[in-house]
Length: 361
Ligand SMILES: *[C@@H]1O[C@H](CO)[C@@H](O)[C@H](O)[C@H]1NC(C)=O
Ligand SMILES: *[C@@H]1O[C@H](CO)[C@@H](O)[C@H](O)[C@H]1NC(C)=O
Ligand SMILES: *[C@@H]1O[C@H](CO)[C@@H](O)[C@H](O)[C@H]1NC(C)=O
Image 1 (tube, helix red, strand yellow):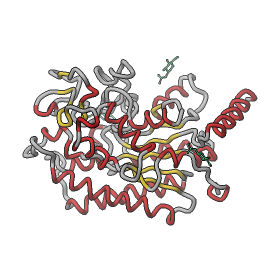
Image 2 (spheres, helix red, strand yellow; image 1 turned 180 degrees about the horizontal axis):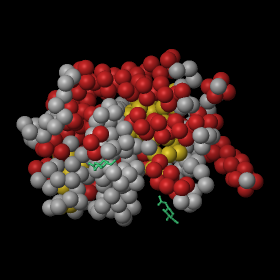
Image 3 (cartoon, helix red, strand yellow; image 1 turned 120 degrees about the vertical axis):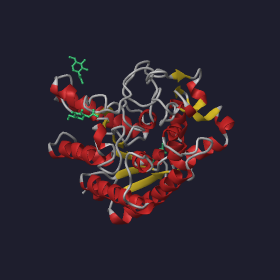
Image 4 (cartoon, protein in one colour; image 1 turned 90 degrees about the horizontal axis):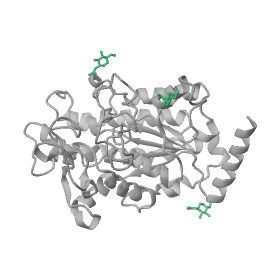
């Protein structure tokens, strides 16, 4: 007990000297952020826990859907924090006695394949955003997390790509118009923000969707173009992103004491696509790892896949996901970039803000 206290005093001292006020990150979303939750859910059919996933950085599969670190991992490193564990791993560690309590550097609840709509990929047994929130809520209610720490923590959400992709999938015939569908998605994000605020979140970062219509997996959709991006899908994504930014703008007045930022991932990725060589890419179209048209017909690691010699040179690692290097460039833009990438302030500035006592209550 005493040792823990001394450790925390030391940590507090160090973070004040280093000018960093954030000691933890709570992460919600889909495969862009999933650090292994699906891997620890044996009923889930959306997996990346086999080679060559993870091969560039971790040198083993971790359940992350890329060859190395995700955006959340990089941001965590920029903050000087250890990488956040998947919630399901932490929970198992506690059950088997390896951990005494939930980690103090935050928790990752993201589940690959999930969307902002609770029905998205439900048949794959993904953990919906609503269930992720429920998991966080139960930790708060059971006093597993320090409420003061939670209020200084960063909250990250990136979700919606799977909803948008599935809208155009022949297996999930949509009943709503594209606009109504986007409004339904935004309503769910609004509910999410309501609830995390209620549970103590004050520093909130909502990340836009990337150009989902450009993923190599579009080759799987009948009638979708393979020589250019899927315009209809990108249009839906842009509408969602616009609504998301409006939601972010409304946060300070709607939720007293909260600060929110909008990460313009779409725009950031479009810059890479427009000037590949300037960013060190020689392929911004095909998956490095996969098979068939655009490398988008088969998941990386599945039968028949091939892998490119230099994953760093490809924007896409697999049929849906960017390479680690793309994630690194996005992370840098979100961390210390200007208003083109993140607004009204970047994550470095957000992390360094000390909330007043008033904002605590
Ligand atoms: C459970 O315990 C063992 C050590 O006894 C550990 O290696 C393992 O990672 C733990 N956690 C999970 C999630 O299996
Ligand atoms: C989803 O989970 C159920 C058990 O809860 C299982 O029977 C089913 O096969 C799983 N679905 C997939 C696609 O793995
Ligand atoms: C953090 O904020 C303090 C003022 O509160 C400032 O002096 C310092 O330069 C900031 N650090 C960074 C990394 O922005």
